[in-house]
Image (cartoon, rainbow, N blue to C red; front, side, top):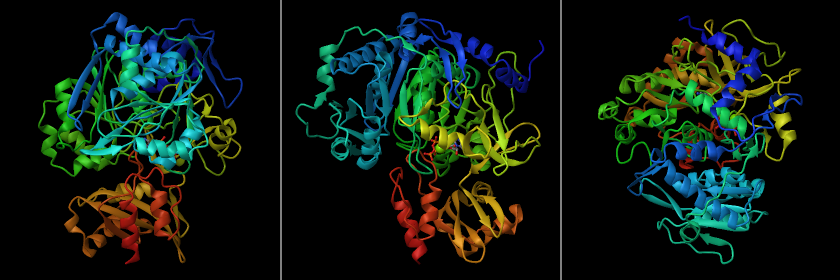
Length: 631
Ligand code: ATP
Ligand code: MG
């Protein structure tokens, strides 16, 4: 049989756009079939599967419960409280219907917002699916956010109801949520009418009379009640979700119903190669887009069991993830480079302690996957490591290798590159000043997407169409294209490399350097576990690069090693890229989703106020840098 190349397949997805997506739309159940595949008549907006009515919960839960009621749907593992629970599709549907009945009894209906502020417990997934079932819009806020960040999200989403829990837990330490939630509600101008509390018995809390509701009590009251799925026009809003806030104020990404379902179902097949009845394990959190797309919706749409994990990759030991892969026969796994870097500080032999025969691939996304880290985990696990690049905004991978498309030749992975533009995405590299398209290989440009964005991507910014248009579509002069705000480069074979964010470029004596390139080079030094490079104002050169490195073994920190790392950069990138200083730290400032907060490092290094730090994970990281620089 002659095989198509991936490039041909991709080209067809754009040239025959509507035919391509009409085929994909058959993957899901529609109550009324779409009348128009794509309405692109009002750029930069796009509407997918116009006139079709469907429901995410029906497609993720009910249709599988009807066909395979006893099939595994949700596996919950908590190493924090020492529990493992398996829900079949029939059990999941019963839980979701009970939750939906509770929401309805509180007056929540189609279009109403429900804010979910929860740890990684099954009730969080029940609440998301219950909203999808009745057409309410969920807004999941990461359970680690403190009251100020939470308050701004409550104000933005204006929820009728908040679903929360008494506490989360991290490495055995109980983190009470309720006091943070109460404070956030008091700070917010918007007051939700009700707060539905899941009481895990971890942290006693005060109840506000007339507002707070007890989940266990209401669940038993509503148990067994049938709540039919509400058929929603494809372009109805399903949820809103905030970006990670790495570069500034988080944006409320708004997603549809039908386009999202089709995009995820297609990706489960073509990109992840997951099959119904198998188990998918994403170690992310439901508070992030990966958790929405690949803990809750994607695997369930595909009829797979999804493993939801409350715990860290290193507790009780650094083999815990692999123990779960073995025990639950995970076939597809999804994690982040930051988790791998954490594992890298432990013995590589732990990667081999468990039988990983079921595992076909490990997908990693969220930040650049440096080659040394990729090689370390690939050697240790012996399965393909597949980098994939996307954004909260896109909802599913934009660059990766899609190696499960029937009749299409697989694309080998290439270290350092997430891969190629996915079908449906009209990806271009543009010159940042002229807006001209860069077609020759190895030229660095802004990575953009042409209109219309494919199904599954954001519809707009919640409540702010102007911000959607002005932020994303007006940044390259003379071109109405969606900017990712990331630098990219395409090699002669079509692999795209991500060279960092467009605002992470530094200018040393007239040379424009991507901090990412310098980081990649330094992390290639054997002593270094992790590194961040920022540009710091310099009277003479405009800017100089400063590196903050975490060593594999902190006792190695010495002026000699600093000199050695500088020489390493000289040899690989040239003296212009050499950092003026390499500081050794034990921790780097990161967002709660594990992304480096370079803007905060830069501000501190320049003695400025680091600005909005609501998404910062561990404040001691910045404190350490401050003390270091004062010396
Ligand atoms: P904000 O938009 O609020 O500043 P954010 O961009 O960090 O936050 P996300 O949507 O979570 O929020 O992250 C998407 C970004 O993460 C991408 O634009 C890119 O910079 C980075 N990224 C994601 N995956 C990869 C990857 N595989 N390789 C390199 N970078 C990646
Ligand atoms: Mg972003």
